Length: 301
Ligand code: BDR
Ligand code: CA
Image (tube, rainbow, N blue to C red; front, top):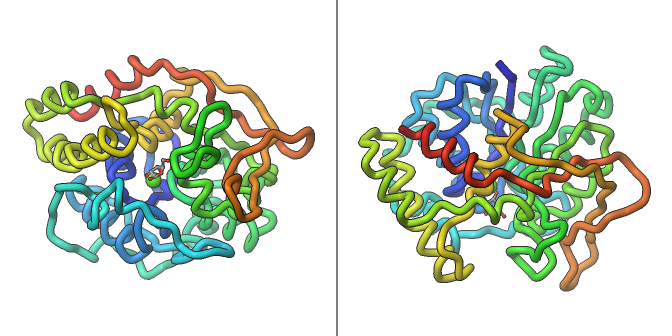
């Protein structure tokens, strides 16, 4: 089993990603770390705890950064709803929340299992940048960082140029891209090809299990937002696809690129640009969308 740490900001698609990860028999989840992103850190942490509760997960939630490295928090309640989980409701529980912080937890696990731990980062990269900054020798001990973020050959979803996770903390993303870690980027180039439709949701309703029901309650809301805000006929499985790549990398095709992030204020802030030097990032540019959607739905059965 692949040892993973999931760095999340739930967020509807984060919750969908956690459901996939915990139902997979291929992943050994060491812990779930949270960061401010779709909502404040307090809310993403409590939401992660609720999701772990419904999934009967054995691991804990570790809270990380409440603020991006340099700028203000940029949230996305307009897509995920005021609670961050759409129409889903579940009693509050703090039982799964550890008192240890996310950065020291990640460092501890990576040092315990050198070259074995993959970080699946589906939120602003603040926690990961802080980890690399605080523990300079850790880069060579991380097996891989799989990042949901960015738009390389397609338009952004926050601005013309930028994708949410990169836009929310461009300085952190820049630091992670320039690190020597093995990195894979699962950006809008591929995630916008994996759309879950209203018909798919009807099918999931028929699965009649509590995890599928929770996904339905969240996704009903998310689908509506994708229809109204993004004018799409389905909602994008951004974060689940990053987990899917950790489970089976054959569903995507990657191209190595040197990447930088525009940090200057203005319309290009958060845009990913290609450079000639640095450390390469394996960028996912093709995905077998049908295969992944079938795989996702099968896992919820
Ligand atoms: C990313 O932004 C967030 O709103 C989603 O959870 C996902 O991680 C997509 O751009
Ligand atoms: Ca996310």
